[in-house]
Image (cartoon, rainbow over all chains, first blue to last red; front, top):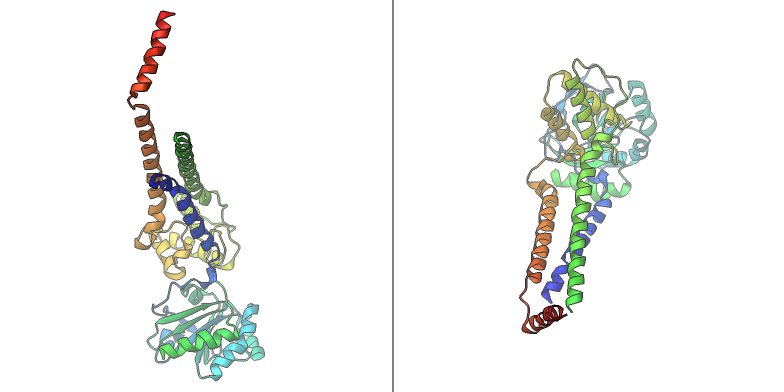
Length: 175
Length: 173
């Protein structure tokens, strides 16, 4: 009898493999963790969008928990996301923008039209800072703690429900 | 009873064989597919054919982070273009393949590797196919041995008597 049950082993093995691979199909590739999680915010030296003369670096993010949002005028989802970012700013969260692969004029127009929740915007026309952040599309949002360590990463659109259920609790956690 | 057992054994044998064969097929496909990818769209100049081949290999084995399943050499996505640019620039700087791959993984994670590295977390990934092939071979060996053993079984007294009778009948005829 046990011998006969043993004969079912290939079938069981196949089923387990099948279930495993089937579950793999439903993994949302945009929910994968950033490679920069728990690592220091990359070093950079870029002018701000507001003032081409003002050059900022990673020390900008030290001292306070900051949400860094990567956006661009060319990115339609970023426009939809702005009300949520304005809401976060109103609740006292410090936001810094990265104007990614944009022109200065278009970037400024964008903030004029959709509002500016950012304390300052890092102007990244070549996408060098974006590349070092592992950004592969906008919007992307990073939570940086007061020591400049990346603690949370959100790829894509931040829904109003994400503000309440994910972003705010994460901000509180690292404050 | 003996018949069903033989049937089951043969079925199990075929299942294991099919399993091993399909697994080898999947492995072969996995090894072949990345090399089938087309070259990137930019025109690049290389000082020597070795660097050019390295560029082709790297852009074929690095996966586009934005795409479902495309190498950066195949993708029209802007981030894939940026990554090709970095691969090219770093090759010109004389960086090694490993340095370039590490540079990408540092930013975009293991997701960009079509060839996952062999480490603690990926042991199952690399080890399972090999383990399954070994198990398959073991099962086949055991079944073949069991069969050989069954055919070498001594005749019972009754069977021996029947055999003798048959041989004697032939002799007397």
